[in-house]
Amino acid sequence: MDLPEEILAHIFSFLPLQDKCNAFAVSKAWSNIMTHPSSWKDTEVRCESETSVPDRYSALLPLVRNLKLRMCLTDPANRKTALWVLRQAVASGDGRLEGLSICCEGNTPLFYAGQDLQQGLVDILTNGSSLTVLDLKGVPFTLSDSFVRSVAMLCPALQRLYINNHSLVCGVNAETLSQVLKSCQSLSVLGVFQASLSQDVFKDLMLPERAALKKLELRCERSLKYTVPLCDQIWLELKLRHPRLWVELELDHTLPELHVPGVLQPSIPVRCLRLLTWTLLLDEVRIVRQSYANTLEVLELQTVPSPELNSELIALAKQCVKLQEVHCYCVVSQEVITAFLTNCPNLCRFTLKTHKEPHPWTSNKLQ
Image (tube, rainbow, N blue to C red; front, side, top):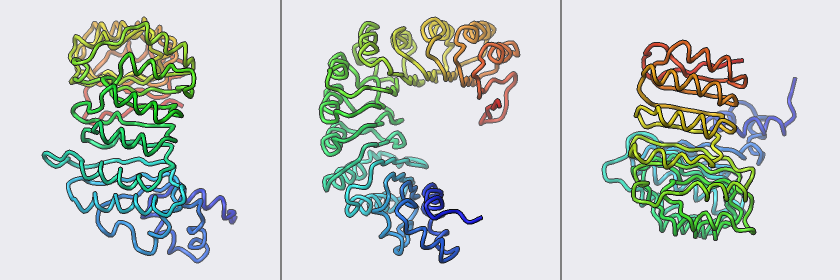
């Protein structure tokens, strides 16, 4: 049965660029459908060479609404291509580009700081931007204060901003984050390093004229040891101002162990928690089940096995009954698995192993 052109165009919108190009050659009918604006609404471009985008299709890039750029940083030509694609999508797109995601693959060149990409992105956005979503979690280099400030001023319509990337250190200070909040009043989803937060930032988030804050993604790493800890009271006040707020916390292995309990304040509405510290985590698991039993839906642990850990996980399973996913990257007992399957009725995915397996461990999905 033939599908309407509008439905086919919607289906084609989910294809990466190369598959879109291949679809052009299937038939005349498909070729016509591929020129429909809906076919280009969501487009992923893999910038692997100067010919990543064939000339005959480059004129269609301004039709893209949500653009995902993938590139390998080792070749400067790939970075140049990525900026060219973005320039084409922005320059004559009449404000169509709404979402931009940048994901870097492969090894980062030694001493590469991403200055060409950061400056290139600012230069392109200077020509006018209607971005509502900017996702930079996939870039491996430190994002500078000046870059983040420039982006905020050039993209005042941003509703979702992710700058919690996996660089070695946090490059964005609290003053810059306050400036971002002042420039982008409609932000409802924010991903940052927790080291970028401060009491002044929380005061900005609680201003009555701000849009409702729906989600905070926080990455906690070594930079936290140079900041003033956030007290539980300020989290309680933020939760009262934004009652629908939920938080995703990621603690990585560079965070000093003595700082972990200070991060896990009981009033944080934690829905997703990733403890990737490779420490014992016995006290931390105990804090989790005592503080986040009513909100926690996703838990990920990277730790070391022990009978004490098994006991704490069984206790956690009995209290955190809203869990939908649990992933523990160390060997656990069968009793732990049974406890989660018995006590967590919403559990749909888990990684719990009773013996070591080759990397990467695969998760189990429940119907």
